[in-house]
Length: 313
Image 1 (cartoon, one colour):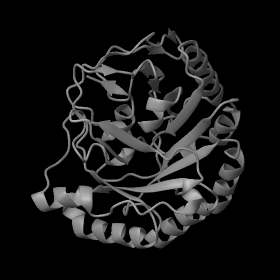
Image 2 (cartoon, one colour; image 1 turned 180 degrees about the vertical axis):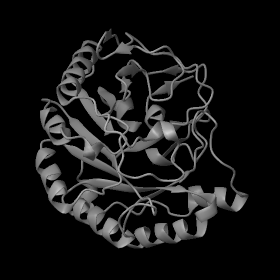
Image 3 (cartoon, one colour; image 1 turned 135 degrees about the vertical axis):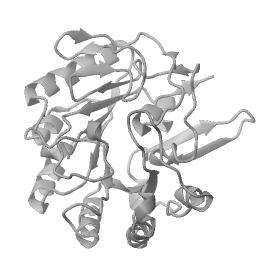
Image 4 (cartoon, helix red, strand yellow; image 1 turned 90 degrees about the vertical axis):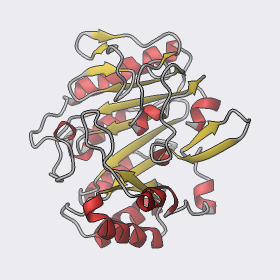
C-alpha cells in the first residue's frame, strides 16, 4: 500500500469474532457464525496496546487499524475499543461492515472515531440482507457527508450477476466508489469461474470517479502502488488488487509480520490473515513480531489485507 512505502505506518487487522447477523448463502462457514463469539473488550484493548509497543520498537510510529469480523459493529465493546486507540502520530480506523446498524449507532460511531485522522468504510452490499439498496445507499451517503471515506464492496455471484450489476450501477450513479469482487469458495479453493466478459467487467465496469476537493483534503487516500520491472508505476484501489491479478509474491521479501499483523477471531496472532507461515503466537500466551521482513511462502495471496504489506523482489 502506498502509505506503507513512504510513511512509518504499521497495519493491524483484529478480528473481534465471527458472529454475523446475516447468513448469506455464498459466505463460507469459516467466515461467519450465528454464535456470539466475541473476544472480550479488555483483551482486545490490551492486545492492541502490545502490538503498538512491539511495532514502535521496530520503528513504526503511525497506525492503521482494521477492526473486522464477522460483523464487527455487533461487538458490544466496539465503540469503547476504537475510542481507546489514541496515538500522538497519524492513525486511522478502517471498518468492513454490512452497515445494518441503525442511524443512532452510526452517530455514536462518528463521535467515537472523531480523533482519527482518517476513517475508511468498506460497505459490503448483500442483497440477501435485511435492508433495501436505497436504505443502504442513504447510510453510505450520510457517512460520507460526515467525512468518512468509503467504497461499496459487492461479491459478484455468477448466478445473480445481472441483479448485482444493476445494484452496482445504482450505487455508482449515486457517487460511490465500487469494488466488484470475485466469489471465493473458501478453504483455499480460490474464486469461482466467470466468463471472459464478466472477468473484464470486474476490473473495468466502474472506474473510480475523480476525487472531489473534499476528498483531496482527507489525509492519504488508500491506494495500492505497483512498481513494474520497466520502471512504470501504477495505482489502484486496494480492493481492486486481487481482481487485477497482482497477487503472486512467493519468494519475495514481505513486510507481513514486521510492518503488519493480523489477530484472528480465536486469538491467534499471524503475519497476515491467509499467510501459510507458523503463527507469531497468541493473545493469551504471548507473541513476537518479526525484527525484519521475511520471505513469502504463500503461492497466491487472496486476501486484500495481506496484499497491503510491502513486497520486494
